[in-house]
Image (cartoon, rainbow, N blue to C red):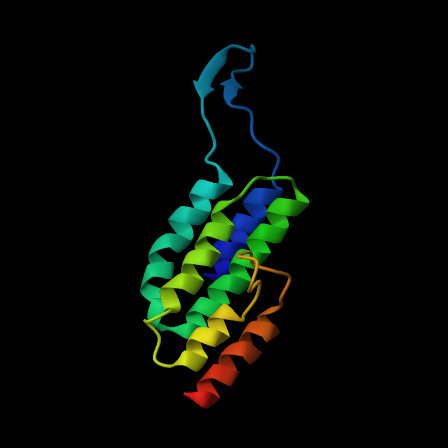
Length: 137
């Protein structure tokens, strides 16, 4: 997932490629619409998010990675509402699925809690949140 997030960050930082590609004479030869960052985030995180619902440590890490993607998208003015959706669904998915209430609170109180958005929290913040839940379970 770390590599996926790094790829999404690089994708957000890249200028949008031209939709119409031309040959050396300037004649249009290919129309290639690049994917939207929203689509790539959904494809990259959706299944992992669903399977991670019972693993609070994984959920907390996914929130940190979503935060990295969100910051990169914001820095480069790339729209990406899917990050907020995935973060919200991660938090909602842990309720009733994780072993203890402390685990739910660790994910709910992790990076970006309260506003439905990943935040600038570092991976150390996520580790401390999840280690706190591990000691209480």
